[in-house]
Image (cartoon, rainbow, N blue to C red; front, side):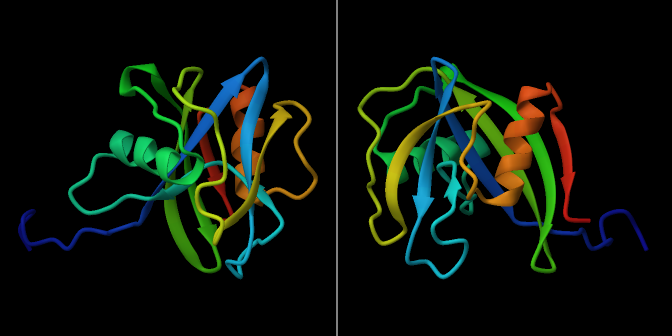
Length: 148
């Protein structure tokens, strides 16, 4: 089989955005989705076809918490390969300290609140792999394997 004929493994990509100010991170509380409701997460979502990962992270941040992020203010802080419910994902966690607008719930059918937490004192109910990603960020670990 030639190199061109080899079937490539395909994996879904999720993007997450850490909005950080004064050692606090903005988190959104999941609600009415049927998965991890009442747990906190970061603004996040899936990569769409024909979309680059940075644009996806900025888009999801705007859709979920209503703020505008300049791509030049964003940095990649963690790459995470997760296995959740027998499916694996590549998660890219971005961070910015700059945005325009005041964060708010923009998708009430998915989230019940936005709240700032000290980055070293996270809520008890948090999506487990998001908690690991944030802990790894604090420990300067930029590659994480979760759930394998």
